[in-house]
Image (cartoon, rainbow, N blue to C red):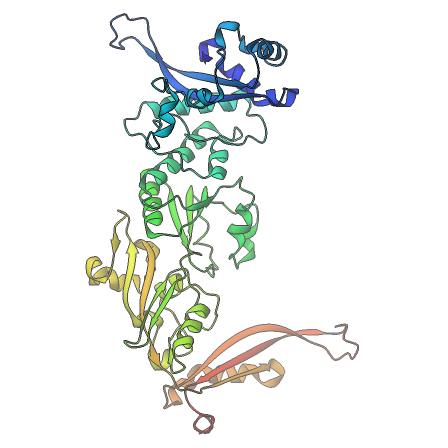
Length: 478
């Protein structure tokens, strides 16, 4: 049975959502399909003077006789107005083709044609589980979106929109404008993804906050007041990132990219305008080639993972980057990449041989195709100023089989001020590039009580000197 908006389709759809809770028999199933039809008073078949409206089609399957079905419908769903002429008794196998709503499927032989496909002309060519009824105002917003979509010549693929995202798009608590924007974006990503749709999360997703906060290291940005992305996308393939870039540009959404999350300014996961967060947590492949002293490292890998994979292949190869193992290589190297071997080998960015990025046009570029100017800029100027980094090709450096590491802490009472002052100029006195001393300054509690309670404690400055020497202990003392 088909009903248009002028025939109270909105009221019927709203009621349909809760019919199952009214104690209907298990033998009854009522499926809903919503589409757009032309209504017109012209008689020449041209469509001139016609108008487009929503039509809700209710397809009912009842495992029993028509007379019994009419009794149930009169009691449980009288608003639909089902009559005898609306029912047709048939074999179950015949009903399986009728339920597909294709008029040309008049025989069961069509069931043998596995290549037959349904036209994608609806809001979504899939079903959603509705956890709570959508209010009428929410349905009216959906109707406007469906009519708007039907006017477009390009039919976007909607069957592969993930369930969570689809649920969010029909959430009536969102303004209709935001609903349309989100749906358009998802449809665009679906149409541009050569692979399957990337995993994505929306603010209504159960895992949204846990994914967002999984690698936020500055806790001030975990507060409710911090702007949240419209979508968090965790791609598995380069084409999925390309789709997000193209569609974000098309729909006016800013892109932030997070590789490790050690961005203490929060620029990789927050913005003051509507934005999409690409989290590269799944881009962590590391391919080490000891023969040519290089490695391809995807942008979502951490420094610790890079170091570990290099050591798996060789104990005398390393990479001159940061000391914190949970920092992502994407942002670290694009900002220069300071580390403890800087005096010997320079910055991490000095050892980038090649790179793969996606620019604003959605093009995947390497060093040759991007040109030397852009290749120079992304090694220190921040990749997100120019595109989305996919991977670095880095040069490995030789390291001794055994090196020396020392950590020493001094408080103000232990002449920390004098030591820090001397540390600033001590590098001028060193004749060896193999030596590096890093400084960290923090606050510690000192207590002279003996019961471990911390009572009568006082706070003081502590300077910690971390030393790395690329050589044996005997040479270090010299």
